[in-house]
Length: 184
Image 1 (cartoon, rainbow, N blue to C red):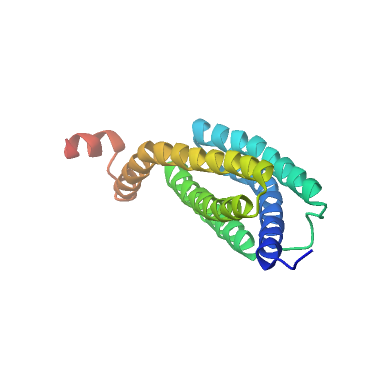
Image 2 (cartoon, rainbow, N blue to C red; image 1 turned 45 degrees about the horizontal axis):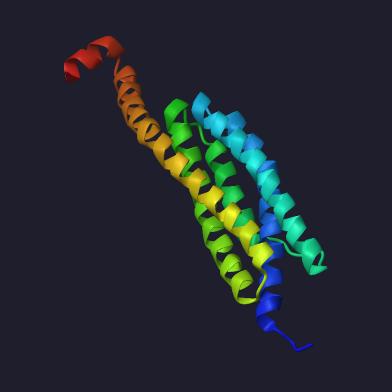
């Protein structure tokens, strides 16, 4: 059997994704707990279930390859999770915190979209059609999650912008009702 460097890279990147997804299984409940919006919290909880499915799909691919999924640490996801934790440690309130959580979550989704796109292309080139089908399904779920986050952000970002103004006015001693009518 000939040495295939692309297959080595493919397996190495699958291991990276496996570690990344397992890091997310641990991080998503924290994001859900930090969310103020019920829709955002529910979205994180839904994605947690999907992420567990992504781990299972990767395990299925490794089993078919006769390889172990462990042995690689995903530095990229570790950094993204750390950035998300830093946002949660900030003293942001309400919609502003949610806007920050969405930003952190979308960075994760974009990272995953790039990674799954690459390994799926390699699976196709390597003739791994069953793995490609599983990777394609995960890739589509990651894209859908990103779209859902974008849709949620359209409302939450507006709320976050509005909450900053009311906070400033409250600090200046202007009651919220008067501040709103003064802006109208």
